[in-house]
Length: 299
Image 1: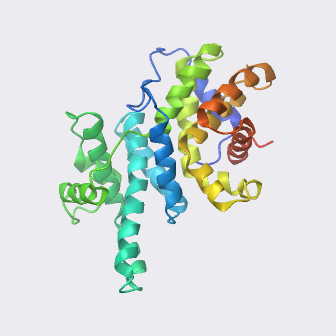
Image 2: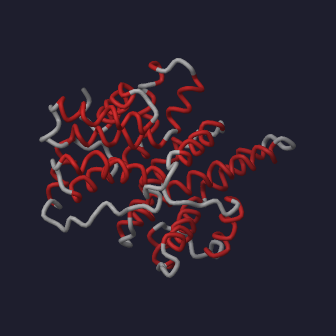
């Protein structure tokens, strides 16, 4: 599902939903218009820019597995993307603990990593269940069905035991997906007022783009490395979910036929959007073009 799609495929899929109920884009707990809403994004960017463990390579199979589970069990985008964010944080926290323990036994790092990666589907099921309860306290998932769908062996540890392990590793740190929240906020602020597509169309294209940019992040950002010479500056740029969400918004403008070639609409959106993302407008365009190259609509 996350193979490189054509622009036509994305837009045509969106059109299938165009006649559906407009009550959409209520996806995340983190998109409310509270005061000082950017601060949590800046703290998050600093967190991801500060560690050395690259998660890009492992995220593609994780995104694909989570997408498979959320589609099969009809889980919400909030659960899907919060699960992905939580799994990535789990990878970083586990790696940090390995680094500390491997100082005394250097060969233990690869051994611990191999064991963890073999058990990753089990951790995915555990995190899906944790996140579902976080999003909706009364929600009860079919854990047996989830394990079967994720190809988790019945002979493995009890999922609830794994959940307690995950919560301990994360130190109870959990929040709704910031990337999804930023996408929703920017869609309401910059796309819907244009009246060029309804909620359902924007949501459909946007959700597919969110999955793709997370899965293909290594390819998307690789082409931009030469444009940002300073390594630390590039890490901060890559870590900022506001910038990525802003690039998704301008990518949607390019994917919708009514706005693809309208410089007037792009100019109306790009400057205030760049201000919200705390970045120059040209950087949003560069990132948009990198996304387009990955989905087969490169310029």
